[in-house]
Image 1 (tube, rainbow over the protein chains, first blue to last red):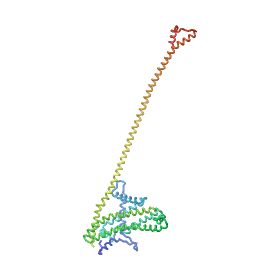
Image 2: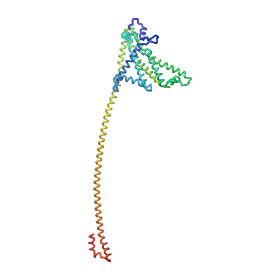
Image 3: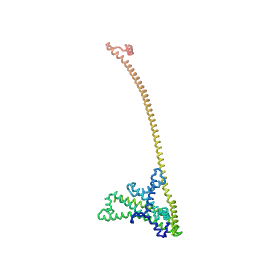
Image 4: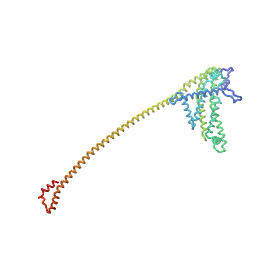
Length: 269
Length: 156
């Protein structure tokens, strides 16, 4: 934060909540949040690259600590998937769950980085005036993930039941196949199909965004004087520690919902 | 607004977070990893030992089997030897017994022959007297010719 113009509370928050927008073409839609893109991609490459490195040198004998950690992670996720999805989970669903969990977890974990120190680094090292480091507090990220899961859900629904079966289910579940209740069924399913990606993405976004706001408020308090600095630091630490839970929990919930939605798509009514 | 203080506060809270993680988050995670490592290592060691034990047991059972076979062969050989011995003994005994029976029979036959001869001797004189009486047409006085008859019987 070494801006020349005078800092106020709103400009502080606004600065931290502004994306690094790169305009691709005319129109509000044709822009990308460069920070979200670059951080999520980098995190994905680094994390899954590390996983790949560990897995590549995996041995059947006594595992190294890194391999044991990855094994614990994979086993944990496989256990979750086994409990919900009853089918050939190794083909797609378990790897999907692992990807979602790990990626969302590391993206959430960017919230731990102290915002103003990172802002200084972004500004002085990378020359970026605006940079938001938590991809999951960008609604574009969470919606992209949720919509991908949504399309997978529809894809598996059609794959398992056939196009006819899927349409039949749209009109004949949950109230029955009487033509009189077809509109009610369809409306019900429509609401379900709309609410699934909304709740899926907004839950994650809301949690991470709220977490960021609280860090910002504590940062503002820290700037008000020595007492503010001390309490801001202590509360910031407390919130960060509590955030460990939120970061893991939200990643876990996102993964569980992904599995549940895909598993539901496999079941016919 | 003093940004320097904010940065100090954030650095402080970040330090506390790192301390917390190092103190309370990392150890249980590491403990889980290490216990897993230990479980796997123990399992592999157990498997190795079990395999070794199995090899030993197989070797020992093969030894015992071979020993038993050897012993069985020995017993069979002994049995065969003993059987042939018994047969030989029985044969010898049978021969002795047979010889004895044959000898007894021979003696009996000789005795029988002797008795028959004796009987014949006693009867031959009567027959001779009867035959001579018939030829001479009269009674021969046995007493008168007794010495002649005795001579005849002795010649038989």
